[in-house]
Image (tube, rainbow, N blue to C red; front, side, top):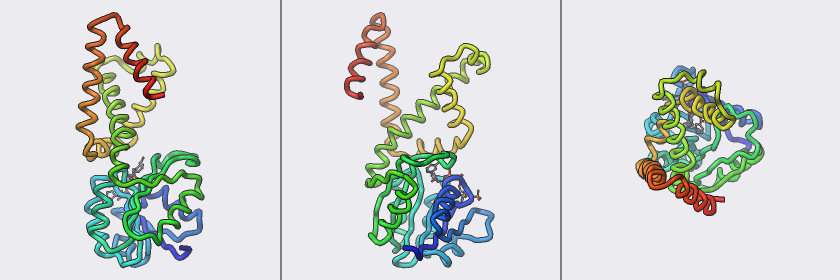
Length: 257
Ligand SMILES: NC(=O)c1ccc[n+]([C@@H]2O[C@H](COP(=O)([O-])OP(=O)(O)OC[C@H]3O[C@@H](n4cnc5c(N)ncnc54)[C@H](OP(=O)(O)O)[C@@H]3O)[C@@H](O)[C@H]2O)c1
């Protein structure tokens, strides 16, 4: 697929720019569009046989509906969205192109991507799959093949539960009304690490994290589990001196590790 010419919608943003750089490094011609660029979506389709959708989650469906019908048989329509079920279904229904869902499981600012995971959801056609897999593997990424459903279920844990935990910690910290600088005077290494994570989630791209949480169908289930875990901790502490909580943690550790 050395004749691949790639157009990235959202190529002026974080992940789009990251993917453009990776592909250009491999010698591919890459065109990008944003909302204010010289090229628009139709220009990209006219010039490229691979189109990548890398816009914010909330804009993804609209962009796929726009670009899908313009694409020719035999070309590739793919995305980098953090959720896979809805974008992949839409790419299939709105186009005749080959379709691959792709989710790099890291952010655009990570300096060394070697050994990081990327999920592929092969949805239509097999022509482009070895090419994409090859490009990603050559950059040192570990490629995992999943269905969109499998991906989204796992993201309910890896992203939704994880970020809910970070957001609740950040909100409680803010509610205490104590200056972080004061808290930091007595901080521990674990606390410092957690504050850095809270800072990244609250400051860097809060819209991305809230979209990841709001759009995953398993979010309410995760919230129920999270609330139950907190209620269980309260009950375990109420009925003893901490021994019951310690035993529950030991049981969980045996399951987990
Ligand atoms: N950031 C991450 O850590 C990460 C990791 C993995 C996957 N992803 C996924 O990658 C995708 C992009 O996320 P990102 O963090 O790279 O976002 P981003 O930095 O905000 O970039 C978004 C890009 O989309 C364009 N855009 C914004 N709104 C648009 C609209 N309504 N119509 C068309 N284009 C629009 C922006 O162009 P202009 O602003 O120039 O107009 C920009 O090029 C998302 O689906 C996200 O789930 C993100």
